Image (cartoon, rainbow, N blue to C red; front, side, top):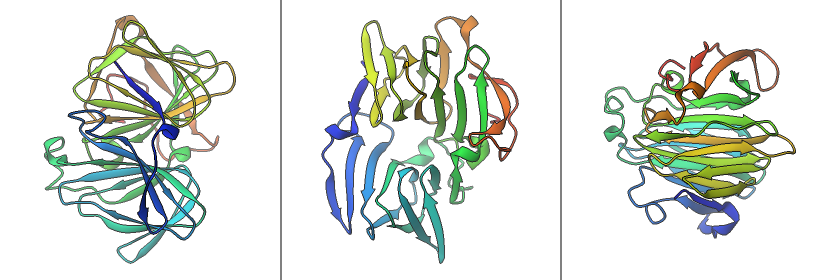
Length: 277
């Protein structure tokens, strides 16, 4: 059965320096999970230490607010909609300027998922997902934006995507094989289905974690776009479709989320062939 809850159901744990952590997904909630995911809030002037071990990998997605990331003598502005990759050995401090809120995830024992990472660790990188290419579904009005892929970041331990469901759109029944998959809902409402009879009405702040091989599908609501980010650990998690004729194929639109020129171009591809995106 899929795990479904809202961030409001998780009590924040004060950590000092104006930082509070809500543990969303961890071994206590999901035995054997390959990562941990938290929601961090940093009050104005607060300081969140981001220290990544030599065999760890982390990423964050800014949900709201503004901050500056101080690392290796550099001051990097971080705003809402930024995605950051924190490589093994990274050390920095995120200083909030306006109630920063971020989704933060850590992968321990990362070389078990990506054996090449020790010899070729990725650099720290920050992107704004609104600048990345928008792809549309071949079958309906759904849209996809890749935010963490092997081609973008040079890693295979994780993969991330932003998904947009206009009202009434839905994806076919499918499941994933070979790893973990979770969603964090950012805007709009809709419905997620899992297994034979699990129905989950979704709203902003919801988290859904699907078990390996668990059949599921998603439907947008009736009012406004439903937007969520989803992550896979490792990136090579396979997607298998109940009806192979309905496999999702994604077509480039030639624009980014803002309507301008994207940072790069992505060719038309099926959802099951993601190595080169």
